[in-house]
Each structure stands twice: as C-alpha cells, then as structure tokens.
Length: 624
Ligand code: ADP
Ligand code: MG
Image (cartoon, rainbow, N blue to C red; front, side, top):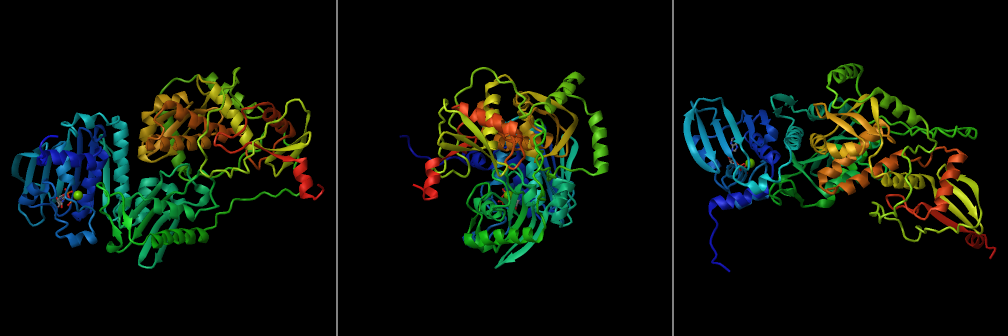
C-alpha cells in the first residue's frame, strides 16, 4: 500500500459534496435552510435548465459581514454551533458548516450579501471553491447566492443527472417542502422565468398547504394535539381519500423535513382497518419536540433523525391522528337492498362505488378555466375522431370487461413477489381440479366467492382474484402494446412536482402502456389517453403508483414496470368482491379457473381458489 497522506481541503470538500450535494434540489434545500436560519421572511428561488446551469436564492435575512462571507465557504465553518454541548440541542436547520463549502467545490458561485447595519455589502465570486473576485457592492439587506454550472468539474456526478424536467421537478419539490416546513416565510419559486409557487408567509400552515396542494387540501382533516412534552399539528387525509402511494406523506420534526419509518408506521397505525391494502394516507404533520429529545446529527443531508423516546413519539402521532379522524365523520355509504336484487344485464358489472378523490375535484369556475385552457393547449399528437368513437364503443361492450384480445399461447406465470400481508400457508391450499369429472355451479357467497361442486370436492373461487389473474395473463401475452382510449375531455390530475417530472421523463414507456400525458403546470398533469380497461380515476391512480415506483428507483427495468402496470390495470379492471355479477359471468370465470393450470394466484400472490371436501364437512358435522 502507498504512504498515508491527509487529503487536501479541496479533495475533502469534493468527498463531502458527494454526500451533501446530490443534485440541484439538494443545493436548493441547503440554501433555503441557510436563508431560514438567517431569519429571512421572504425567499425567492429561481432556476433555469432544471437548476443545472443557473440557480439563485435571494433572502432578506441577516446577511454576512465581509469577513464572514469569506469564511462561510470554508469547510466546517458555521455560526450556528460553538461547542460539543451545542450538538445536543440544535435549534437551527444547519449546524455542520458543510453545505456552502461542498456546493462551492462543485460549481461557480456569485455571492452578494449585506448586514442590515452596514453601509455597503460584499460581492464574492468563487470557482471550484476558490475565491476569484471580491469587492464591495451596493445591495439590499440579506443574501443572494447564484450557483452556476453545477458539477462542471465532476463529470462523474454530472452523468447521474436526469433531464432538466426531472431535476426541475425535484427542485420544485424541495421548495414546496421548505414552504410547508416554514409557513412563516414567504417563498417564491420561479422556474425558467415563470412563477411556479408563491406562499404568503403568514405563519398559517393551512395557507402554505393550500398553496402547495391547491384547494382540494381543504378536504384534509386538521389536527392539533399534545402528548407529554410533544406537540403535533397539521393535516391528514380522510381514510376514504387514501392515495396509491406514500408520496404525499410529509413529516417535519422541529420544522425540519424528515423521513422516518417510525413516523410513517405511527400514522398508518391510526388508519388500520379503515384503509385498503395498498392505499396510504396523506399528511402534512409538524411534530415539535424538545431539542434535547431528538438527534438530528445522524445523516449528512439531515433528513433522518433519532428520537430519545421512540414509543412516546409513536403514541403522540398515532393517538393524535386517531383522535382527529374519530372527530371527523367519514363513513362510506352502505346500500341495503330489502329484496334480492335482480340480476343485472350481463354486460353491466355493478359499478364500483364512486369515491370523490382527494386532490381531484374542481370548482365550477376552475373547471371553466380548465376546459378553456385545455382547448388552447396544443395537442401533442393528432388523434382521429374515429379512434375516439371506436374506443367509446368498445368499452361499452364486453361482459367481463375484457378488452384485449387473447393471443394463442399463455405464458407460464412467473413467480410473483409476495404480497404485503403474506398469506398463512395452511389457508393457501391451491387445488388442482381433475378435468374429466363434470362440475356444477352452485352459487355465490357474499357477492365474492363462487361455489362449484365437482365430485366429492367443493371449490370456493375468489371472483376478483380470478378475474384479475385472467386479465393479467391476457395483457401480458399481448406484448405489443396496451390498447388505449382517448378521453373525450382530458383529465387534470394533481401530483407532487417530482412525480410529474419522473412521469414526463418516462413518456415513451407510458405511451407503450397506453397513457398519453402532458404537462399542465401548477403540479398538474393532463391525461389525454389511458389504458382501455381503466376509467379516468383508476388511470390517475395507476399513474401515481407508477410514479412512486419510478421515483423509488425500484422499477428500473422496463419489464417490471410494465408488469407492475399490468397488475394495476388488471386489478382495477377486474370485477370486485362485493359487486353483483350475473350467473353467466360467474360461470365463465369458474370455467376458466377449473380448466386452466396457470390460474392459481392473483398477480399479488393471493390464492384464487380453495377447496372444501365432503370429508371435511362430514368431520365438522361429526358424521365420520
Ligand atoms: P451551516 O448552515 O451548517 O452553518 P453552511 O455551510 O450552510 O453551514 O453555511 C455556513 C455559514 O454561512 C452559516 O453558519 C451562516 O453563518 C452563513 N450563511 C450561509 N448562508 C447564509 C445566508 N443566506 N444568510 C446569512 N448567513 C448565511
Ligand atoms: Mg447550512
């Protein structure tokens, strides 16, 4: 091995930059935290080209004296921490003294800063962390930092950057996060010359949430509670407004945005048994704890925290949310039918109960504006009217809502990843039915399970799981493309900024999956075309699930993204447990399940069919 040397400050900074400065959004996060720490009440963020070439943060905070401005860019230079004891109770957003040094080491920086008492300000320019120019300057109180050409000297990092749209989306998400963290500060975000967000800075969290999520945020349940020395405030979604992903769960601990399994688990515990598997509550929650009860120094980007008393934190969130939900009526309407309901016509499966969806409704005026804007928006691709007519006609037809024509061979089902709640093995008995013995359709239980008798065995078939699997196999076999329908009126769907960016980035994939989308501004996506088997609400849900998968990086491979979407399409399009189905529909399903070996599990791994033998029954009735 070579001789050990101490790394030069420049190399040390580059290494630190790798931890702190991942992309333009992380630069913005650090600069915004500095502005907040400087006591700013107004902060403006401006970016061009996703923040890669130009990124400016202006604040009206305390500014820096000339000598401080110079020192600020040195590693471990901070005004927020003096002694080791201070680390035990940090009240500022920053404390590591690393951000400016790290950012400066991988970019070109111009700084303008002035303290309120001073006559003049300071102008500094840096390149790769070295000061290249310094002068006095006339400027307003506060600080302006311009970061240009991020990663110009670290091509390896540059390679990891996504398109400007994606990076810009992540910056937008970072600004939104700070706006929700600090309702007392007025944030303005300008992207490529256009204002994309502006919060009033009145101190009202409700106002900040409104600016970020739009008027639909009014459907959330407000929450205010105290638990020992902790206090909790914010907004949570009603169980009926659950989301297909966790993208809209936002937690702050002492105004710091954090990611924490503990907090997520505590939130979701409050929704237990009220929310469907695979759906998640949304929230904007501020937890305030004594500074000594939490360690924020566990992660370079300061997004993780460690609590002294995890149980108390869990209870605080769990009971706080539960209390708020219990105060709010949110019962799905049950429809009682006094007499046996008439069997519906074969082609109409009973419609799913329509849920008003969180973040999706518009006022009459908004709708008017929206439709006017849609008319003006350029169509990305010409769609023949005939195709639309055809799509409409086709969706009205098929009895089992199958719209994809089945090609000849069925591929053998791949092993399926385990569902969130693994089934207990003894329940998951997957029977194989002898083909030669005649079978008889007996009936249906609970509008969910088809009963079939064959010789000395009875089969209970989960009609949703069976239909889902059948649709999934069909979709999968049809490798070409997923049939899609053009919506007569495009649907506007609100999503988080980074979700929109990642979907736009993956347009070719989405097109293959039957979606046509367009950016519509204001955190809104315009959905023009959707897979044939989905309705617009389902399609919007599927897009959100997909965006969460893409963002999490779990679905890098195209095939698995496709499979995942096919699961979603199949699941949404399949008849549901609890729906009324005609005998004809049930017969067709049973027929397929009994005759095909590949229909053992639904795409999420739950069994499709279980058996009940005559012997078992006789044993129960003590006949044998
Ligand atoms: P930290 O925030 O952890 O202290 P930074 O590298 O982010 O470290 O900033 C270094 C120092 O520069 C801060 O401690 C602060 O004194 C000063 N500083 C940075 N940004 C600003 C700003 N916008 N206004 C006033 N002072 C600032
Ligand atoms: Mg800082």
